[in-house]
Image 1 (tube, rainbow, N blue to C red):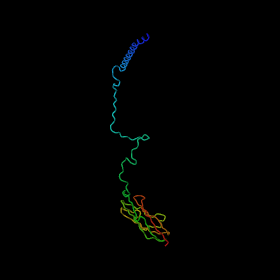
Image 2: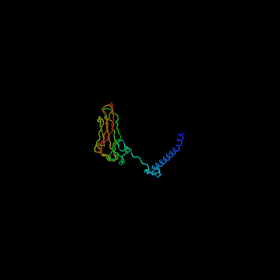
Image 3: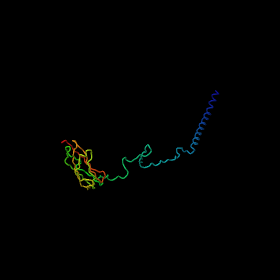
Image 4: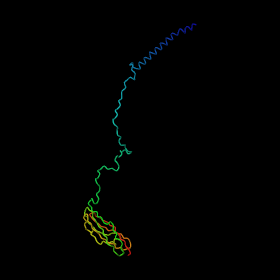
Length: 211
């Protein structure tokens, strides 16, 4: 019985000790919190943060430039086939516009018909005209070709040195004497200046027969 009274007698002391321990822990907790905040009572969140201002964005819309090619150079923007120099006015003048004579023949080809071998056909005439605009000087009249001998010039006002003013004409008369019973061809050539080498060529045709 004496041991039981001793245990119960110690309970008030244990309770008092626990109460003192709780009070001490509470005081220590308050001190730690106060030291952590520096005693100012302000939260770190209340500190003023430096403000960062955004850079102003440029106004308007930028136009993209040309994209470099694989070689690193900018692409050529010129349109194919175009020129950058002055455009020539007008076109190249025609022979008549440049002041050169351009003789013509009527008819443009001459058929002397059919003639018997050893006989001569009726004469036929070619007219040479200078349409202008400048005078022309004739350099000669001739029959050319493999069968030239069967065609004969029997008369001409288009001789060497003859001059044809603009609008004037001259004539060449020919006959045909066949050497064989066949169709024969040659050419009448009238040469003139001021263009060296200029000429009018008239195809000639004749047919030979046995009778």
